[in-house]
Image 1 (cartoon, rainbow, N blue to C red):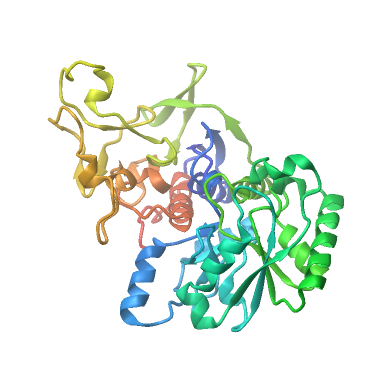
Image 2: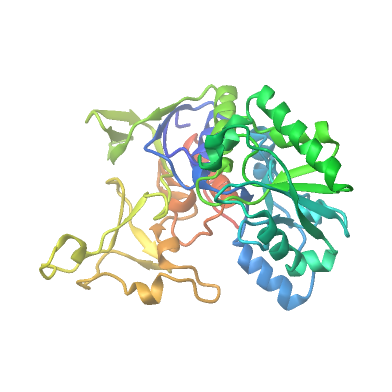
Length: 423
């Protein structure tokens, strides 16, 4: 058994690794170099890219139902307490987006409104607020025209409401506005204004609001539902919405249960020293351990750096060809994309992004797919990868949790847990 484990990265994959390794009695040191993709997510929880599921459902002409998930994901979700996942065989979640369409999801942040759970023919109300991310009238019209809404005869209507208490709330960030509703007194005021608006509007079956229902408190939506006796939920937010802050809040609570602590420090290098590994930190002092989990994310999170040769050439021609991608820290790993190792590249200007930076059919963008080449989650004995850091795996939250849990279990020395099947 590996007794000392270092986990690099504090997103969904890193959290899954710490959760699994700690449960197996490992002494875990958890290092986080900065905000990653999990903390910037909008609240949808997927196992596979939702566009693939939507295309398959359209071709087959069938309603997509929730498939089975590995038991480890169910265990993690119960401990994490932030996400809701439909049970196997139930309809997948349907989330209203700020762009005015309804998108599929395997699950969601519990503050979001799941339209799949709203009764057919329901009247869904949207309060008008003078905020830059929110146009209730346009959003109501767009959502009413969505094919899913039409098939369920859902009616979206904008209503007048006075939900801003202070002048600055017209322009502060949505996440900052959401944080004000963590305060119970302010939430009560917000609830009273909603109750007044609903009384003027008449019958309502659900209330759809912007990404404003709490930043640290994950139960604001449930509290409003109880007080108003009405289903209340958010739209799917954009990058940097309150859902990311709620992820961090739920992570903090789970850390406290696990007895884990995040250290805000960069890891610069990982190297083997005999039977151990050394991890060099910002202070240039190596930390020794028996196993390492690399869960630093992909290109989107900065875990993989896109750095073609001409990027360093200025106005001159690049002096030599080179590999256009590298890991954000030095480690004994090899990168791969689309099944090809990125060991030797003769190009002077890197990949042609016009050709490979966009998804085509079922193939993801190279910028999404590039990552560490490994067998399952194992790079070599004692060294593991998880989440978006792994090459050619779906960049979804549940895949990140699953690979993180497998990597954490393997790092803690549990045999037979290094394979990675489809979640």
